[in-house]
Length: 60
Image (cartoon, rainbow, N blue to C red; front, side, top):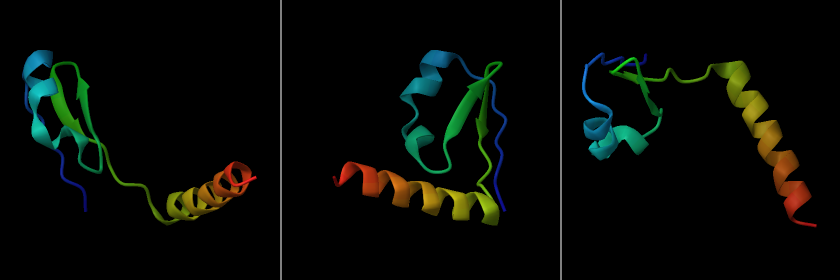
C-alpha cells in the first residue's frame, strides 16, 4: 500500500528535504508534497522487459 502525505510547503523547503529521492519518488504539485504510487504487476513486467532490451542495446 502506498502512503500519501499532503503537506503545503514552499518549493525551496521541498528541495531541501532528504527523503524526496527515495522510491517511490515524491512530487511537488500545487505547493503540496505527494508521494507517487508504486506501479503494479503489469508495470513491473514491462519494466523488466524494457531493462532487458536496454541492456542488450548498450552491451553491443
